Image (cartoon, rainbow over all chains, first blue to last red; front, side, top):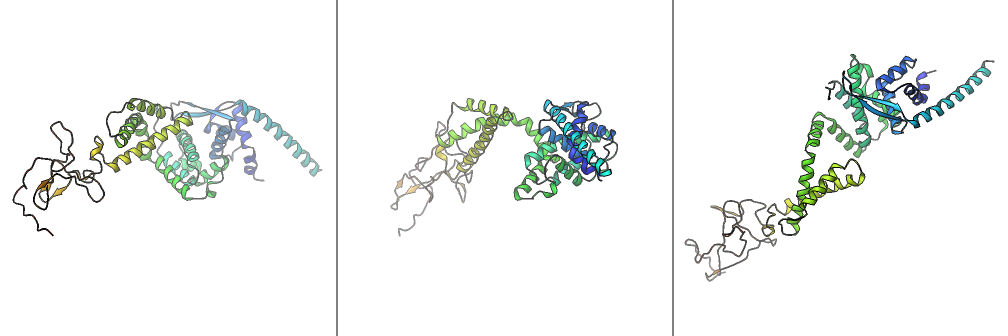
Length: 108
Length: 270
């Protein structure tokens, strides 16, 4: 199965989960996502997702001056984003349990 | 502090923008504004060229559009308005366009003051015969306030646009009606088409001498086929004026003249 297709459906949750552990700028978030094993995520996907989350009020942003180059736009979870992440994680776990149960029955 | 943007950012950004050319202008500008910063961050962090790091710009644009919740850019209908929008975005984001935008942002306060003066000045000149108008100062103040706060509220933004449109309108109306607006009496004359007025074989005509068919001098008002008063100049591009500096428009002759200048043969009566 193509993991990329699966990932598209949960990219919002993945990005918000990374942000729950600490604010970050676009490239930093991409690196953190890849570090946990989501190697196939593209830069545009993360950037586009951040834009959508931002427009939805789930993340906020602020600029931080950088000595190495242009100012970096950091993103952080809003209260609405944290609430949404909590709901999404519950939904995801229920979904996984359901599938695990299904897979278990199929294997038996 | 402003940092130098990596030179590979803008071409890549332009290619992405081109792919997103059918998007509504406001959305495209918003995306591109932040994307430039994002790409600049990447370029500053990575030694690998952007195009190798991110892949082809078209694919990047499609992935961006999909993940941001818009239809893939390749699915956008390239309507006429979409093309205009794309061109405008392209011009806005070109090096020259952005330079002009930067310069414009610096001179905008001057423009706010200028239009605040232009509107009452031209409106008064066009419709009230000219002269000083007391509302020049409040007009300038209101114009500056509208421009200054146009980004903060829709009502200010609408007022700012209205002021700009009104300014352009009075400027065009002023040009069409003649720029000699200090004196409405010289509007609709030949000075507007030709700053030297009416030109004869030996140069600008500065006066007319009218005679009856019997050779008697008469004073006349002259109008052309459109009803515009025929206006001469003093020979230097200015309307003739009296000793107090006020323009003299009619009747002719403007200067005292009791006999035809020179030996002018009168034509035979028809």
